[in-house]
Length: 498
Ligand code: BES
Ligand code: ZN
Ligand code: ZN
Image (tube, rainbow, N blue to C red; front, side):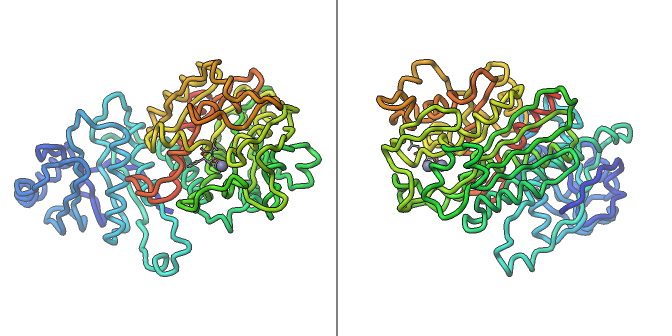
């Protein structure tokens, strides 16, 4: 794990493998770059005159062993037009630079990227974005690649340079926050990237238990305990699987005893074959990621604990596989849920809402202040929003507004879909209380309508991360695989709330 420091000081004085300076469109340097240029004779000026890409966003240029600088490399990180720069741009740029320098064998680097101005952002915001970018961008899941793992030399330390000593304290706090957030996100990624033969419900329970801390209580219910508690909807989905389900409850007591907790609920489907309504073969392997909702919950807990967030949290995860077998639940079955509502199963592949019904009903029973659930719930959400935003629905405007704001701020974005009463018609059943599919139209919304029946009148928001939870292309801040969607979003929300 890379160490991140903050320091104030001139670029010419640093003795590092690389000193990273921003360069703006039009080959414009910022203050530290100009100061370094003044110490290094003509080298930088000559180089800049020849530098082709003119500081376009994401371009990286390097100079080696420049006289007047003690560092091995001077690295120019193209930031584009300064007025167009966002915190997300800063996060992405930091990620790219860190990755490229690691590939080149650097071990210790210092970065002057927070000198860039970002409209509406404080220095602490910028330090946090840079620190997050470095740690998220360097993330790898290579434990199963025996050769690669051995051969990579890791970046050891990154020092975020700031202009004034006076801001050191607040910058250090920002780094601490970023460290917790990135560790939480990368933990969620680690859990979700595990293959489905390793990440089974039992293993997920062990991972939850591994978060142990004096302010945290983790209860992992095995099949027997689940039967006893009456989580019958979860048991129905589990019928076709050779592996036991788990129902996981986390209680974090960071707030006052009397404070109602915020409940975080996650879909922990460790593999979704679709059940008897089997999925097509293409990309079915990606359904190992169907537990990303639960991974987000665990990532948020990990970060909340390490930040010491002063509030109470309740985590609830329902976990099983959705498989086919002689005992599997079938289209046409009627399942009685924990809450007592009966569910007509018309498609066994719409299993997420079924297991969440028990998790949400249990959460609602604990009378939390609000409930936020995370689930890779619908293919329809991937079609509607793609990978750029998670679907957001719920029954409470204030909660929705808060999440929307945090989504924009963290760039872990959400977009609201309407929950008009009329949509509820689509999940009416002729023979049970509700049915588990609502037809092709508005599939993301009717799934949320289903969930809404289990939260009573508690303020509730549902985050459909089907399109955002993993990616098969890789982005600046995430390699191919799980992204940790939802973690930054909710940590920002919780922080503002406390
Ligand atoms: N886990 C899937 C949703 C999903 C599909 C997430 C693709 C990410 C990518 C979920 O359990 C599911 O299969 N939903 C069905 C519901 C349908 C049968 C009403 C879907 O979206 O096709
Ligand atoms: Zn499914
Ligand atoms: Zn699923």
